[in-house]
Image (cartoon, rainbow, N blue to C red; front, side, top):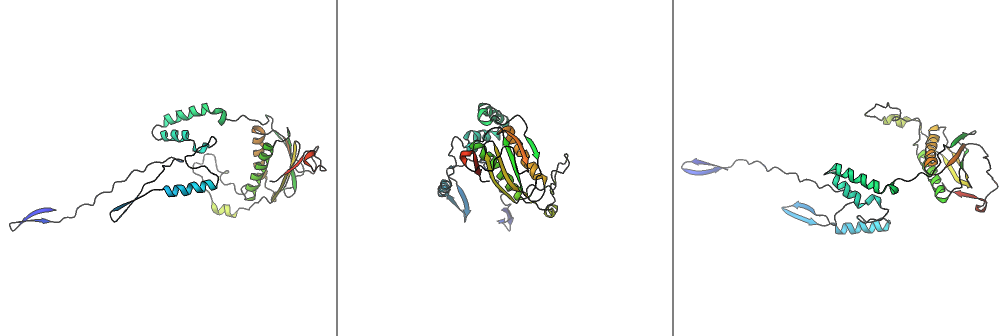
Length: 278
């Protein structure tokens, strides 16, 4: 409003006033795994502020977690490393003092090194790999281990073979479409041609049999289908790590109808023969 003098009378002329500038409210950073017991939700409607709490929503979430056998948010167990309160506390310091957070993390690793770093239980010797008239569409893969397999060893081998089969069945090991691995090492911004990938010859791992075990020997039948050596490389790379870190593997043989002391007449667990589903 601007006062003016007109005909001896004081008048006020209306001028447009600038609109108030909106101030941004800073967002509160919430670390993963941390959540307050209740939430305040504010909503402005016709000049009124509506407040609501998330208590009912959290109770419903807690019931769903119970049904799935999962821990509640904020509920920690000895083996629940994903929701470790110490980690959450360290990460909270990271935004204010990164060097302090790094120092605390290093101290934690030193104290819990025996739990974090596991000793290798495999073999220091590399496994021997042999190809004996291997047919991609109908062949056995033979395994010879340094020792008889324990239940945990059987699970490890079965999990590795199952993962290999799933990845191959989905076409993940297709040497006809290796765009990123064929880029130069100094490429700082990779590009991916979706049309080229769609037109690449598809590959699929057709079928795999059960893992049959006799003492320290094992075999699995495979029908890989298309002759793509990348599938075999993926398997051998995985088995090489198993051999060095977890379970000693003496030899892997691709193909062949016989293998050393394998006995096809054995068919009972008492005779050291067992079958495990992949």
